[in-house]
Amino acid sequence: MTSSSRILLGIDPGLRHTGWGVIAQQGNRLSFKAAGRISPDPAAPMALRLLALAEGIDNLVKAHQPDEAAIEETFVNRNARSALILGQARGSVILALAQNGLSVAEYAANRIKQSVTGYGHAEKTQIQAMIALLLPGSGKLVTDAADALAVAVTHAHHRT
Image (cartoon, rainbow, N blue to C red; front, side):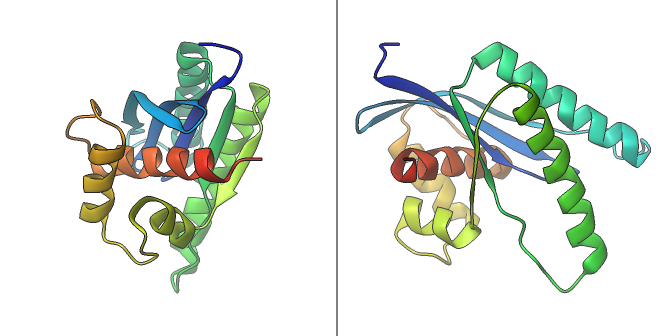
């Protein structure tokens, strides 16, 4: 990559599945690099699940050498326990990114949907379809990976 290109890592955090997506940005051009998800053992104790997320992020950063990272903000819902668990997963991921020297931007779900589909309340299938159009070669993705690529695309459009 030239000095004007950037490698961006997008993260869709979750304790069961944390989606990740890597894109390259060169000017206005975006290209797909890789995507997937980290899925800690659901039977493992909480501390080990959070460790698995952190180690997974650490491995991703070492493998793909991103210049910047972005993560979806926590969606606050009525279930306080779910919000707390998601917050712990996000914290583990953000810590791993920071330990690798990456700046971490945060974007609200509605902003991500608006950036990718033009509609702030888009469905997951709409996001998957737009990611396939915006990032040729990304193939058929699980929703977590498509959402993470949407975070990366949003960051490419809004980064300073």
